[in-house]
Image (cartoon, rainbow, N blue to C red):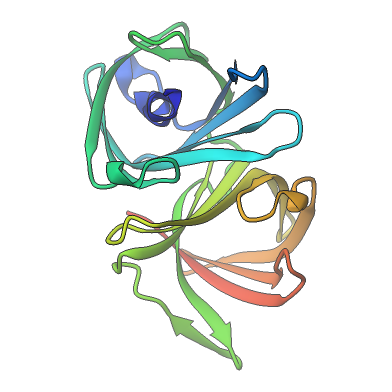
Length: 236
């Protein structure tokens, strides 16, 4: 199944032969039923995620990702979440990659070629983030980011994805993503896939955002219309 490959492909990592994979990549494939599937990969310097969804209506198919490293052309990933196969959580997978210019790459032995969407720009919020707090009754309540249950966001220059999961129980709890912009203190998400409710696809959500002492303060209303104030910390 190409899910595993997809997750690593982008791992092709940023330093291979001086070429960088930081940013977002995509490719399409066709299922056995003739459905066109879009796959999008986003990765920061250390963390990555890949998601497949219907190119027609955004129906979620699967996602996986985690920590990556590279040695020459060999990429190794430590899986933190996998919606299709939880038994892979905690395992490592390695593969070789091959570049065709700066904007196209494939995994050796695979026919999937990934095309670059962006290289991490403009990227005011580019990177991997963990939810580290919420404001309730006017006070920030901090969350321990070292615990096994995590909510992570990975942003390239133009794309975002959030993933909720637990590395100890290996449970995948949900994800959503699409494109985003940051303009004049406003962070806007345009949803292209949402694992919990496909009816959210096509919606746009606008939030206020600011960086305070390196932390991302995020406020507005959730996809359910409820007020929220979240604090996100850069994942190291």
